[in-house]
Amino acid sequence: MSLRLRLIALVCGALVLSLVLGGATAWLNASRSVRTEMRSALLVGRQTIESAIERLQQAREPLRDLDELVVSFEGNRHLRVRLIGEAQAVATPVVESPPFGAVPRWFVRVIGVRPVTDRVPIAVNGRDYGTIAVETDPHNEILEVWNEFTDSLVTPVMLSGLTILLIYLFIGRALRPLESLAGALEQIGDGRYRTPMGDRLAPELARLRDSFNRMAARLAAADGENRRLNEQLLTLQEQERSELARDLHDEVSPFLFAISIDAASASRMLKEGRATEAREHVQSIADAVRPLQRQVRSMLGRLHPIGLDEFGLREALQNMIAFWRRRCPEIHYQLSVSGGCEDLGEPMGSTICRIVQESLSNSVRHAEATLITVSIVRQGKEVRVEILDNGRGMSESNGPGFGLVGISERVRAIGGRLTVSNKPSGGVEVAAVLPRRVRQEAAAVSVQAEEP
Image (cartoon, rainbow, N blue to C red; front, side, top):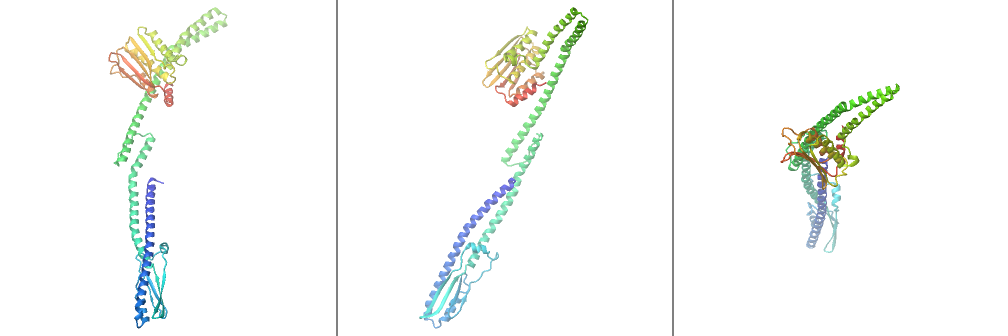
């Protein structure tokens, strides 16, 4: 059942209940009123007859006076009078015509007032002239109550009908914005977030409309940001794939080619019995394998920090610093890892390694720094990562590159914050604040981001 029909049914129920209570009260009053009226009419009629009989004691023609007495009740609304004896005079009440039709039998039964008969014996100067029977007739009184009931019922019924009609129309008009809101929510569910509502509404619904418009705007902004980040992520993935392909082609492929040539030559010489010459080719293979292993290890370190799983965060960071110290020994490196940061687990550990790796790479390549400081500190429920250098800083024209954009996305995926700014004293500060406990869904996003 719709909300409109439920509200109308509630109002109808309240109106019906009020009518039932009002009808019960009217029934009690009406039944009591009819009984009182019949009792009063019977009492007045008996007193009238008894007074007339006393006057008949001096009458010359009692029978004629008795007939006149009975006839005097003709037209009474509530009494039927009959003379039972030597004369047979009858006086019947006037039957009034109902304006709203005859009184229904069920209404007469509900009132529950039956006719009552009282008999008054007639004795004049010791002579018995019979009996006068006085019988109440509640028909006219019940008809009067019925007319009052129908008169009082017409107005409430008309008002109730008008009220229900107005409620139906008003609720339909009031619920129309909710139908628009439902349609707008369906469009948002389909991915169409730019669906503002601009109708003029009541203050209560206006707040709902404004909240919906703000939600739609934020969803649209979030959707646009997600699209932009996805594009950047795809660009980063393509860039990483290109770098891996270049390294494989330039560094790994020549060694593999040399190894294949030496292996073929050694095999041919062994078949020809020239073992001494074949030994030289085998030694060449061993010499080629060592730089090939170093190159593969370097590539693996770029894909996943070396030592993180085996020895922990400190060892992995020391390996990164050692990598750059061998290549740029003129730069002084400082590493500080506070207690409680050794066993952060995934994806926290790999995220910290990626932040440090990218920051070290940027400082060494672009900053012309002489000092790089790496600090990992646990602060309550958060972990703060800082990488500082004393280089020339970051120019305003050159914003963050793809590497920092990818790191920023990785940090936000686990619920953290990343800032990159120039220090007042010179150099660049990269600061990340990461939550100690990472949500499972954030961890899943971070793992997906690591996949090439």
